[in-house]
Length: 489
Image (cartoon, helix red, strand yellow):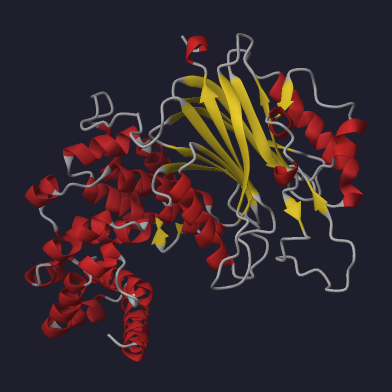
Protein backbone atom coordinates (compact mmCIF):
# COMPACT_ATOMS: atom_id res chain seq x y z
CA UNK A 1 0.00 0.00 0.00
CA UNK A 2 1.43 3.37 -1.03
CA UNK A 3 1.99 6.19 1.43
CA UNK A 4 -0.84 8.39 0.07
CA UNK A 5 -3.27 5.46 0.22
CA UNK A 6 -2.26 4.76 3.82
CA UNK A 7 -2.84 8.40 4.73
CA UNK A 8 -6.28 8.40 3.09
CA UNK A 9 -7.27 5.14 4.78
CA UNK A 10 -6.17 6.47 8.18
CA UNK A 11 -8.29 9.56 7.65
CA UNK A 12 -11.34 7.47 6.67
CA UNK A 13 -10.98 5.07 9.59
CA UNK A 14 -10.44 7.90 12.08
CA UNK A 15 -13.59 9.60 10.80
CA UNK A 16 -15.65 6.40 11.07
CA UNK A 17 -14.39 5.76 14.61
CA UNK A 18 -15.15 9.29 15.79
CA UNK A 19 -18.64 9.33 14.28
CA UNK A 20 -19.68 5.71 14.96
CA UNK A 21 -18.91 5.62 18.68
CA UNK A 22 -22.22 5.26 20.57
CA UNK A 23 -24.14 5.62 17.26
CA UNK A 24 -26.13 2.38 16.94
CA UNK A 25 -27.56 3.25 13.51
CA UNK A 26 -24.18 4.06 11.96
CA UNK A 27 -22.59 0.93 13.48
CA UNK A 28 -25.42 -1.11 11.98
CA UNK A 29 -24.79 0.44 8.56
CA UNK A 30 -21.06 -0.34 8.82
CA UNK A 31 -21.82 -3.94 9.77
CA UNK A 32 -23.91 -4.27 6.57
CA UNK A 33 -20.97 -3.17 4.38
CA UNK A 34 -19.93 -6.73 3.63
CA UNK A 35 -17.31 -5.85 1.01
CA UNK A 36 -15.71 -3.21 3.25
CA UNK A 37 -15.55 -5.60 6.20
CA UNK A 38 -14.17 -8.38 4.03
CA UNK A 39 -11.47 -6.06 2.68
CA UNK A 40 -10.65 -4.86 6.20
CA UNK A 41 -10.26 -8.36 7.64
CA UNK A 42 -8.28 -9.51 4.58
CA UNK A 43 -5.89 -6.61 5.15
CA UNK A 44 -5.47 -7.66 8.80
CA UNK A 45 -4.67 -11.20 7.63
CA UNK A 46 -2.17 -9.96 5.03
CA UNK A 47 -0.40 -7.82 7.62
CA UNK A 48 0.10 -10.53 10.24
CA UNK A 49 3.41 -11.77 8.85
CA UNK A 50 5.05 -8.37 8.09
CA UNK A 51 3.69 -6.95 11.35
CA UNK A 52 5.28 -9.62 13.52
CA UNK A 53 8.49 -9.88 11.50
CA UNK A 54 8.78 -6.08 11.15
CA UNK A 55 10.13 -6.70 7.67
CA UNK A 56 7.97 -4.13 5.87
CA UNK A 57 9.21 -0.53 5.62
CA UNK A 58 5.59 0.60 5.73
CA UNK A 59 4.68 -1.13 8.98
CA UNK A 60 5.22 2.00 11.06
CA UNK A 61 2.17 3.58 9.45
CA UNK A 62 0.61 0.18 8.97
CA UNK A 63 0.58 -0.33 12.74
CA UNK A 64 -1.61 2.76 13.05
CA UNK A 65 -4.08 1.27 10.55
CA UNK A 66 -4.10 -2.07 12.40
CA UNK A 67 -5.01 -0.24 15.59
CA UNK A 68 -7.71 1.82 13.84
CA UNK A 69 -9.25 -1.28 12.21
CA UNK A 70 -9.30 -3.09 15.55
CA UNK A 71 -10.88 -0.06 17.21
CA UNK A 72 -13.59 0.19 14.54
CA UNK A 73 -14.41 -3.51 14.83
CA UNK A 74 -14.65 -3.12 18.59
CA UNK A 75 -17.06 -0.17 18.32
CA UNK A 76 -19.30 -2.00 15.83
CA UNK A 77 -19.39 -5.19 17.93
CA UNK A 78 -20.52 -3.29 21.01
CA UNK A 79 -24.03 -3.70 19.60
CA UNK A 80 -25.25 -7.29 19.73
CA UNK A 81 -27.25 -7.13 16.50
CA UNK A 82 -24.00 -6.56 14.53
CA UNK A 83 -22.06 -9.49 15.95
CA UNK A 84 -23.14 -12.22 13.54
CA UNK A 85 -22.23 -10.13 10.49
CA UNK A 86 -18.77 -9.51 11.96
CA UNK A 87 -18.43 -13.22 12.71
CA UNK A 88 -19.36 -13.98 9.09
CA UNK A 89 -16.13 -12.35 7.86
CA UNK A 90 -14.15 -14.76 10.10
CA UNK A 91 -13.19 -12.06 12.56
CA UNK A 92 -12.28 -14.52 15.33
CA UNK A 93 -9.60 -16.15 13.18
CA UNK A 94 -8.42 -12.73 11.98
CA UNK A 95 -8.08 -11.12 15.41
CA UNK A 96 -6.58 -14.03 17.35
CA UNK A 97 -2.95 -13.60 16.12
CA UNK A 98 -2.91 -9.99 17.31
CA UNK A 99 -3.32 -11.13 20.91
CA UNK A 100 0.44 -11.79 20.67
CA UNK A 101 1.30 -8.26 19.52
CA UNK A 102 4.24 -6.53 21.17
CA UNK A 103 1.93 -3.51 21.63
CA UNK A 104 -0.34 -3.83 24.64
CA UNK A 105 -2.81 -1.39 23.06
CA UNK A 106 -3.37 -3.64 20.04
CA UNK A 107 -3.47 -6.72 22.26
CA UNK A 108 -6.18 -5.17 24.41
CA UNK A 109 -8.19 -4.06 21.37
CA UNK A 110 -7.96 -7.58 19.94
CA UNK A 111 -9.04 -9.01 23.27
CA UNK A 112 -11.95 -6.56 23.41
CA UNK A 113 -13.22 -7.52 19.95
CA UNK A 114 -12.88 -11.24 20.66
CA UNK A 115 -14.58 -10.91 24.03
CA UNK A 116 -17.54 -9.26 22.25
CA UNK A 117 -18.01 -11.78 19.44
CA UNK A 118 -16.84 -15.15 20.80
CA UNK A 119 -19.43 -17.45 22.29
CA UNK A 120 -18.88 -19.26 25.58
CA UNK A 121 -17.24 -22.33 24.07
CA UNK A 122 -14.96 -20.19 21.89
CA UNK A 123 -13.92 -18.04 24.84
CA UNK A 124 -12.86 -21.23 26.62
CA UNK A 125 -10.44 -22.09 23.81
CA UNK A 126 -8.92 -18.62 23.41
CA UNK A 127 -5.42 -18.73 24.86
CA UNK A 128 -5.09 -15.30 26.43
CA UNK A 129 -1.71 -14.78 27.96
CA UNK A 130 -0.95 -13.62 31.47
CA UNK A 131 0.69 -10.38 30.30
CA UNK A 132 -2.42 -8.99 28.60
CA UNK A 133 -4.60 -9.93 31.60
CA UNK A 134 -2.15 -8.03 33.81
CA UNK A 135 -2.30 -5.06 31.46
CA UNK A 136 -6.12 -5.15 31.46
CA UNK A 137 -6.17 -5.01 35.27
CA UNK A 138 -3.57 -2.24 35.28
CA UNK A 139 -5.60 -0.25 32.72
CA UNK A 140 -8.62 -0.48 35.05
CA UNK A 141 -6.49 0.85 37.93
CA UNK A 142 -5.17 3.70 35.77
CA UNK A 143 -8.68 4.66 34.61
CA UNK A 144 -9.68 4.83 38.28
CA UNK A 145 -6.78 7.15 39.06
CA UNK A 146 -7.23 9.66 36.24
CA UNK A 147 -9.57 12.56 36.73
CA UNK A 148 -11.27 12.00 33.37
CA UNK A 149 -11.89 8.33 34.30
CA UNK A 150 -10.38 6.88 31.19
CA UNK A 151 -7.01 5.51 30.26
CA UNK A 152 -5.55 5.54 26.76
CA UNK A 153 -8.76 5.08 24.70
CA UNK A 154 -10.70 3.16 27.36
CA UNK A 155 -13.43 4.31 29.70
CA UNK A 156 -14.11 2.53 32.98
CA UNK A 157 -17.36 1.17 31.56
CA UNK A 158 -15.60 -0.32 28.52
CA UNK A 159 -12.87 -1.88 30.64
CA UNK A 160 -15.41 -3.34 33.06
CA UNK A 161 -17.30 -4.89 30.13
CA UNK A 162 -14.09 -6.42 28.76
CA UNK A 163 -13.37 -7.91 32.19
CA UNK A 164 -16.89 -9.31 32.33
CA UNK A 165 -16.57 -10.97 28.91
CA UNK A 166 -13.03 -12.27 29.42
CA UNK A 167 -14.01 -13.72 32.81
CA UNK A 168 -16.22 -16.28 31.03
CA UNK A 169 -12.99 -18.27 30.58
CA UNK A 170 -12.05 -20.17 33.77
CA UNK A 171 -8.30 -19.67 33.35
CA UNK A 172 -8.67 -15.98 32.56
CA UNK A 173 -10.98 -15.55 35.53
CA UNK A 174 -8.30 -17.01 37.78
CA UNK A 175 -5.66 -14.71 36.31
CA UNK A 176 -7.89 -11.67 36.77
CA UNK A 177 -8.33 -12.51 40.44
CA UNK A 178 -4.62 -13.25 40.83
CA UNK A 179 -3.73 -9.81 39.48
CA UNK A 180 -6.11 -7.98 41.81
CA UNK A 181 -9.12 -7.01 39.70
CA UNK A 182 -11.79 -7.71 42.34
CA UNK A 183 -11.15 -4.70 44.64
CA UNK A 184 -10.88 -2.45 41.58
CA UNK A 185 -14.25 -3.60 40.29
CA UNK A 186 -15.80 -3.16 43.70
CA UNK A 187 -14.47 0.42 43.80
CA UNK A 188 -16.01 1.16 40.39
CA UNK A 189 -19.30 -0.45 41.39
CA UNK A 190 -19.47 1.71 44.49
CA UNK A 191 -19.20 4.80 42.29
CA UNK A 192 -22.08 3.57 40.12
CA UNK A 193 -22.29 6.71 38.03
CA UNK A 194 -24.45 5.03 35.38
CA UNK A 195 -26.80 2.05 35.48
CA UNK A 196 -24.90 0.47 32.60
CA UNK A 197 -21.55 0.80 34.36
CA UNK A 198 -22.89 -0.46 37.67
CA UNK A 199 -24.53 -3.49 36.03
CA UNK A 200 -21.39 -4.42 34.08
CA UNK A 201 -19.20 -4.17 37.16
CA UNK A 202 -21.65 -5.94 39.44
CA UNK A 203 -21.87 -8.93 37.11
CA UNK A 204 -18.10 -9.06 36.69
CA UNK A 205 -17.52 -8.86 40.43
CA UNK A 206 -20.06 -11.59 41.15
CA UNK A 207 -18.42 -13.82 38.55
CA UNK A 208 -14.94 -13.21 39.92
CA UNK A 209 -15.79 -13.55 43.60
CA UNK A 210 -17.02 -17.10 42.99
CA UNK A 211 -13.44 -18.26 42.65
CA UNK A 212 -11.55 -15.98 45.05
CA UNK A 213 -11.33 -18.85 47.52
CA UNK A 214 -10.09 -21.30 44.87
CA UNK A 215 -6.58 -21.70 43.66
CA UNK A 216 -6.13 -19.93 40.33
CA UNK A 217 -5.64 -22.16 37.33
CA UNK A 218 -2.67 -21.79 35.07
CA UNK A 219 -0.62 -19.86 37.59
CA UNK A 220 2.80 -19.20 36.15
CA UNK A 221 6.15 -19.67 37.83
CA UNK A 222 7.69 -16.53 39.26
CA UNK A 223 11.09 -17.49 37.93
CA UNK A 224 12.25 -15.72 34.78
CA UNK A 225 14.15 -17.93 32.36
CA UNK A 226 15.91 -14.98 30.77
CA UNK A 227 17.18 -13.55 34.05
CA UNK A 228 20.18 -15.04 35.82
CA UNK A 229 19.27 -16.27 39.32
CA UNK A 230 22.69 -15.09 40.53
CA UNK A 231 22.44 -11.40 39.61
CA UNK A 232 20.15 -8.39 39.88
CA UNK A 233 20.07 -5.48 37.43
CA UNK A 234 18.87 -2.02 38.46
CA UNK A 235 18.29 0.95 36.15
CA UNK A 236 17.67 4.55 37.27
CA UNK A 237 16.92 7.25 34.68
CA UNK A 238 15.42 10.72 34.48
CA UNK A 239 13.76 10.47 31.06
CA UNK A 240 13.13 14.21 30.57
CA UNK A 241 9.36 14.03 30.30
CA UNK A 242 8.94 17.75 30.97
CA UNK A 243 10.39 18.51 27.53
CA UNK A 244 8.01 17.82 24.63
CA UNK A 245 10.80 18.05 22.04
CA UNK A 246 11.04 14.70 20.19
CA UNK A 247 9.35 13.07 23.17
CA UNK A 248 7.97 10.07 21.25
CA UNK A 249 11.30 9.28 19.63
CA UNK A 250 13.14 9.72 22.92
CA UNK A 251 10.71 7.56 24.88
CA UNK A 252 10.90 4.90 22.18
CA UNK A 253 14.67 4.84 22.66
CA UNK A 254 14.20 4.38 26.42
CA UNK A 255 11.76 1.53 25.74
CA UNK A 256 14.18 -0.12 23.32
CA UNK A 257 16.93 -0.06 25.94
CA UNK A 258 14.66 -1.49 28.64
CA UNK A 259 13.47 -4.33 26.40
CA UNK A 260 17.01 -5.08 25.31
CA UNK A 261 18.72 -5.00 28.72
CA UNK A 262 15.69 -6.20 30.76
CA UNK A 263 16.64 -4.80 34.21
CA UNK A 264 14.90 -6.44 37.16
CA UNK A 265 14.11 -3.06 38.77
CA UNK A 266 13.73 0.36 37.12
CA UNK A 267 13.51 3.80 38.74
CA UNK A 268 12.21 6.49 36.36
CA UNK A 269 11.89 10.21 37.00
CA UNK A 270 10.12 12.92 34.98
CA UNK A 271 7.51 10.52 33.64
CA UNK A 272 4.29 12.04 32.25
CA UNK A 273 0.99 10.36 31.38
CA UNK A 274 1.83 10.16 27.65
CA UNK A 275 5.22 8.51 28.23
CA UNK A 276 3.73 6.19 30.86
CA UNK A 277 1.19 5.08 28.27
CA UNK A 278 3.97 4.32 25.76
CA UNK A 279 6.02 2.45 28.35
CA UNK A 280 3.07 0.39 29.57
CA UNK A 281 2.14 -0.64 26.04
CA UNK A 282 5.64 -1.71 25.04
CA UNK A 283 7.34 -2.98 28.21
CA UNK A 284 5.29 -6.13 28.64
CA UNK A 285 7.39 -7.80 31.35
CA UNK A 286 6.89 -5.14 34.01
CA UNK A 287 4.52 -4.09 36.76
CA UNK A 288 4.25 -0.28 37.00
CA UNK A 289 3.93 1.57 40.31
CA UNK A 290 3.38 5.32 39.86
CA UNK A 291 3.74 8.08 42.41
CA UNK A 292 1.04 10.11 40.60
CA UNK A 293 -0.68 10.46 37.22
CA UNK A 294 -0.59 14.23 36.82
CA UNK A 295 2.09 16.74 35.86
CA UNK A 296 5.35 14.73 35.99
CA UNK A 297 6.12 12.00 38.48
CA UNK A 298 8.29 9.00 39.37
CA UNK A 299 7.62 5.39 38.45
CA UNK A 300 9.07 2.16 39.81
CA UNK A 301 8.95 -0.70 37.32
CA UNK A 302 9.58 -4.27 38.50
CA UNK A 303 9.84 -7.39 36.39
CA UNK A 304 6.68 -9.20 37.35
CA UNK A 305 8.09 -12.73 37.14
CA UNK A 306 11.04 -11.84 39.35
CA UNK A 307 9.85 -9.24 41.87
CA UNK A 308 6.92 -9.75 44.24
CA UNK A 309 5.60 -6.48 45.70
CA UNK A 310 4.15 -6.63 49.22
CA UNK A 311 3.66 -2.93 50.00
CA UNK A 312 3.87 0.46 48.28
CA UNK A 313 3.82 3.96 49.76
CA UNK A 314 4.07 7.55 48.55
CA UNK A 315 5.62 9.87 51.13
CA UNK A 316 5.05 13.55 50.25
CA UNK A 317 7.65 16.21 50.93
CA UNK A 318 5.16 18.68 52.35
CA UNK A 319 7.48 21.69 52.14
CA UNK A 320 8.26 21.10 48.45
CA UNK A 321 7.16 23.82 46.04
CA UNK A 322 7.59 21.43 43.10
CA UNK A 323 5.35 18.57 44.22
CA UNK A 324 8.22 16.20 45.04
CA UNK A 325 7.69 12.89 46.85
CA UNK A 326 9.53 9.79 48.02
CA UNK A 327 8.31 6.53 46.51
CA UNK A 328 8.85 3.40 48.63
CA UNK A 329 8.15 -0.25 47.70
CA UNK A 330 8.66 -3.33 49.86
CA UNK A 331 9.22 -6.50 47.85
CA UNK A 332 11.26 -9.62 47.32
CA UNK A 333 13.68 -9.83 44.40
CA UNK A 334 14.57 -13.43 43.58
CA UNK A 335 13.44 -14.31 47.13
CA UNK A 336 15.61 -11.58 48.70
CA UNK A 337 13.70 -9.14 50.98
CA UNK A 338 14.26 -5.59 49.70
CA UNK A 339 13.05 -2.00 49.98
CA UNK A 340 13.09 0.01 46.75
CA UNK A 341 13.04 3.80 46.93
CA UNK A 342 13.18 6.52 44.31
CA UNK A 343 12.75 10.27 44.29
CA UNK A 344 13.25 13.34 42.15
CA UNK A 345 14.47 15.86 44.69
CA UNK A 346 13.87 19.62 44.50
CA UNK A 347 15.50 21.24 41.48
CA UNK A 348 17.53 24.43 41.01
CA UNK A 349 20.35 26.08 42.95
CA UNK A 350 17.97 28.35 44.86
CA UNK A 351 16.26 25.34 46.47
CA UNK A 352 19.39 23.84 48.03
CA UNK A 353 18.05 23.95 51.60
CA UNK A 354 14.79 22.22 50.63
CA UNK A 355 16.71 19.62 48.63
CA UNK A 356 18.98 18.83 51.60
CA UNK A 357 15.91 18.61 53.84
CA UNK A 358 14.31 16.12 51.42
CA UNK A 359 17.52 14.08 51.22
CA UNK A 360 17.74 13.90 55.02
CA UNK A 361 14.15 12.64 55.22
CA UNK A 362 14.77 10.07 52.50
CA UNK A 363 17.95 8.83 54.14
CA UNK A 364 16.05 8.53 57.42
CA UNK A 365 13.77 6.02 55.64
CA UNK A 366 16.80 4.22 54.22
CA UNK A 367 18.48 3.87 57.62
CA UNK A 368 15.32 2.92 59.50
CA UNK A 369 13.95 0.37 57.05
CA UNK A 370 13.49 -3.16 58.40
CA UNK A 371 16.92 -4.60 59.23
CA UNK A 372 16.19 -7.87 57.45
CA UNK A 373 15.95 -6.05 54.11
CA UNK A 374 18.41 -4.69 51.57
CA UNK A 375 17.56 -1.07 50.69
CA UNK A 376 18.15 0.34 47.19
CA UNK A 377 17.54 4.08 46.83
CA UNK A 378 18.15 5.76 43.48
CA UNK A 379 16.97 8.66 41.38
CA UNK A 380 17.63 12.17 40.20
CA UNK A 381 18.66 13.80 43.48
CA UNK A 382 19.76 17.12 41.91
CA UNK A 383 22.38 17.13 44.63
CA UNK A 384 26.02 18.17 44.63
CA UNK A 385 28.92 16.74 46.62
CA UNK A 386 29.17 20.06 48.47
CA UNK A 387 25.58 19.67 49.71
CA UNK A 388 26.29 16.12 50.91
CA UNK A 389 29.28 17.47 52.85
CA UNK A 390 27.08 20.20 54.36
CA UNK A 391 24.82 17.38 55.59
CA UNK A 392 27.91 15.87 57.26
CA UNK A 393 28.02 13.07 54.70
CA UNK A 394 25.90 9.96 54.31
CA UNK A 395 24.72 8.12 57.43
CA UNK A 396 26.75 5.15 58.59
CA UNK A 397 25.95 2.06 56.57
CA UNK A 398 24.58 3.92 53.53
CA UNK A 399 26.79 3.27 50.50
CA UNK A 400 27.18 5.36 47.35
CA UNK A 401 27.44 2.80 44.55
CA UNK A 402 29.53 4.95 42.22
CA UNK A 403 32.12 5.13 45.00
CA UNK A 404 31.73 1.47 45.93
CA UNK A 405 32.40 0.37 42.35
CA UNK A 406 35.68 2.27 42.03
CA UNK A 407 34.94 5.97 41.35
CA UNK A 408 35.35 5.58 37.61
CA UNK A 409 35.76 9.09 36.17
CA UNK A 410 34.07 8.01 32.94
CA UNK A 411 30.83 7.23 34.79
CA UNK A 412 30.90 10.14 37.24
CA UNK A 413 28.69 12.80 35.65
CA UNK A 414 25.11 11.89 34.82
CA UNK A 415 24.19 15.41 33.64
CA UNK A 416 26.91 16.55 31.27
CA UNK A 417 26.16 19.53 29.04
CA UNK A 418 29.62 19.36 27.48
CA UNK A 419 28.41 16.23 25.65
CA UNK A 420 24.63 16.13 25.95
CA UNK A 421 23.09 18.77 23.68
CA UNK A 422 19.41 18.24 24.56
CA UNK A 423 19.23 21.45 26.59
CA UNK A 424 20.50 23.57 23.68
CA UNK A 425 22.72 25.83 25.76
CA UNK A 426 23.97 28.93 23.98
CA UNK A 427 26.72 28.09 21.52
CA UNK A 428 28.91 30.87 22.89
CA UNK A 429 28.50 29.79 26.51
CA UNK A 430 31.97 28.86 27.71
CA UNK A 431 30.89 27.08 30.89
CA UNK A 432 29.30 23.68 30.19
CA UNK A 433 28.30 22.25 33.58
CA UNK A 434 28.55 18.56 34.36
CA UNK A 435 27.25 17.22 37.67
CA UNK A 436 26.56 13.89 39.37
CA UNK A 437 22.87 14.63 39.89
CA UNK A 438 21.75 11.00 39.64
CA UNK A 439 22.89 8.53 42.30
CA UNK A 440 22.13 5.10 43.70
CA UNK A 441 22.57 4.34 47.41
CA UNK A 442 22.38 0.99 49.18
CA UNK A 443 22.04 -0.22 52.75
CA UNK A 444 22.76 -3.84 53.60
CA UNK A 445 20.61 -5.86 56.00
CA UNK A 446 21.81 -6.36 59.57
CA UNK A 447 23.20 -9.75 58.65
CA UNK A 448 25.97 -10.19 56.08
CA UNK A 449 25.46 -8.44 52.71
CA UNK A 450 23.32 -10.53 50.37
CA UNK A 451 24.12 -8.59 47.18
CA UNK A 452 27.29 -6.87 45.98
CA UNK A 453 27.52 -4.17 43.27
CA UNK A 454 29.93 -5.33 40.57
CA UNK A 455 29.48 -2.77 37.79
CA UNK A 456 28.23 0.81 37.39
CA UNK A 457 27.46 1.98 33.83
CA UNK A 458 26.02 5.10 32.22
CA UNK A 459 23.54 4.52 29.41
CA UNK A 460 21.68 6.66 26.87
CA UNK A 461 24.89 8.22 25.54
CA UNK A 462 24.19 7.62 21.85
CA UNK A 463 22.15 10.05 19.80
CA UNK A 464 18.93 8.92 18.15
CA UNK A 465 19.68 9.16 14.40
CA UNK A 466 16.16 10.18 13.35
CA UNK A 467 16.01 13.29 15.53
CA UNK A 468 19.67 14.00 16.35
CA UNK A 469 19.17 14.11 20.09
CA UNK A 470 19.79 11.91 23.12
CA UNK A 471 17.02 9.93 24.85
CA UNK A 472 17.24 12.35 27.79
CA UNK A 473 19.28 15.27 29.06
CA UNK A 474 20.42 12.86 31.82
CA UNK A 475 22.38 9.67 31.33
CA UNK A 476 20.79 6.65 32.94
CA UNK A 477 22.58 4.49 35.52
CA UNK A 478 22.67 0.69 35.16
CA UNK A 479 24.07 -1.27 38.11
CA UNK A 480 24.73 -5.02 38.18
CA UNK A 481 24.69 -6.84 41.52
CA UNK A 482 25.93 -10.32 42.30
CA UNK A 483 23.83 -12.34 44.74
CA UNK A 484 26.00 -13.78 47.51
CA UNK A 485 24.67 -17.30 47.71
CA UNK A 486 26.38 -18.21 50.96
CA UNK A 487 24.62 -15.32 52.75
CA UNK A 488 21.11 -15.91 51.41
CA UNK A 489 20.47 -19.27 53.04
